[in-house]
Image 1 (tube, rainbow, N blue to C red):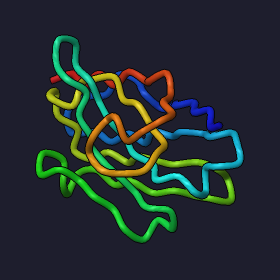
Image 2 (image 1 turned 90 degrees about the horizontal axis):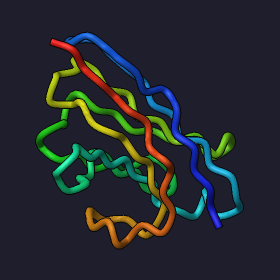
Image 3 (image 1 turned 180 degrees about the vertical axis):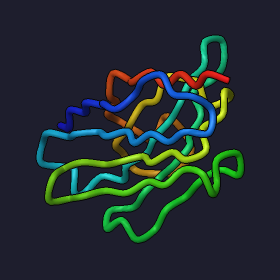
Length: 121
């Protein structure tokens, strides 16, 4: 079992940066592929970053590649999402998830409660 708690969201001006954190409790963090998703009301939840067990392999969709960086610290049971050059289109609730990997939401068994990121223009 893994419990996930996100933090670091907030209101930011366009062009700014933000770092989201996701603290995990439970013994399976180090054996879980971690991911960040985001969701806008009325739209499907979409993946924005995935990181493998060791942290040496990552995936980003084209929409965020170059602006988002995912990392993990297995000693601290924490995964991070650094976001640069924020755009109003990045406004969403951001969720971290733990699971088997891939872009399909169904591959992730554990989810945090989400943290709101709002980017003003």
